Image (cartoon, rainbow, N blue to C red; front, side, top):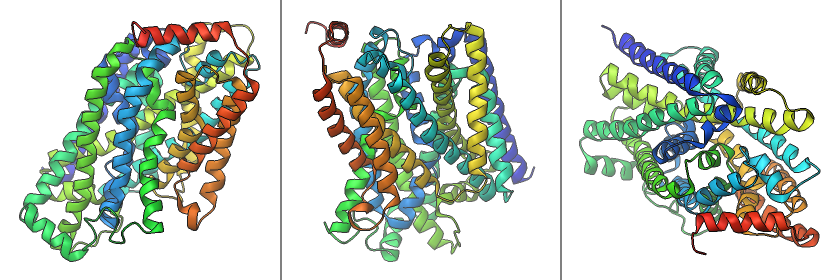
Length: 498
């Protein structure tokens, strides 16, 4: 049997498995809340692995190893920032958000929570936050499609467009019908596949180049600064901006709708603790594997005199060259898993924004449950079509597309999520102003370049939005007994006895 046939068998089995899980979830999903939030019934291990897999996307196995391959350990600041951010997100946001969203009129989306939490009677906060979700998630979904196209282009020497279409169609298949539960259950399988791949591939590469010592010596010989966290320049202004930019990625966690919605879907707030341990452990192992893959890729390419065109394909190259075709096919499936897990989660959040936060606000009479579920599926399809049109001719790297969308959500929503949970005086006008300022800052800062503007736009966006929210809220604050009661009730649930 040829190597190519083994690869097709592995990928075929993976695709079939994802569709089967989607079908099972479809049979277990009933009603609009079930489609959008799985009835708040996720066990901690499902929530943890689902949050991690939907978080990391194709950049974990393609973007990050490629960045390490090119620039060395200085790119690890992103991984450090993400690890710290994920830990704090589970610790600070997860339990309180799970409790507060249920206490505050059973909010099942982030925009509806913002509206209910601040008692925004104008509905503008809910609609604006939904529009922000649609704009940035369309870019985010597009990055997943780009990664799918690049994957098939580099793996099978096929056409980019057909790879993009195949990944999109399969992901749509289990997301359209399985909803949030389907996305979460497939995320679990995909998360396990990703972490196993990021252990197996670098270990095989180390063995092939003669061991860890030999690999490290070769990497140092090729680039003495590859192992320097500061790129060999010390704390220069340029390096400081790079370090701060990497760490700033961690701030983005607080505002990512496709991640925090997993917190809202937990069975109960107390289960966030065990979910945190599982999720952060998964993330540390996965990120370490991605970093090591990028490093060992330098030695492997040099030792075998390979002309590597796209650095983001280094893991794909090593898996195909070093592993049995069936195992290599499963590793390749893990790359697709990284892409598709994020892709599916984002489609569900976009659908919820359109149906729950725009359609239900515009329409005065409540539609039937079946109508809402059907609309949810149609919205998933619509967002995918728009994102596909953007992905046909990609003009940025996978990491670049993800980075911009991550900054947008982190700046627009991150400060508001934190203030909603921990500051009684946040007002609807403070939240709305912060969203607008955060979003504008990301677009304006991202368009500029040179000097301070080389700083990752998430950091200034987050800071400016936070300051704006506090100033405007203090200027517009009026005590509301219902808000006070909900805040106190939530605190008593999360911290019993206080």
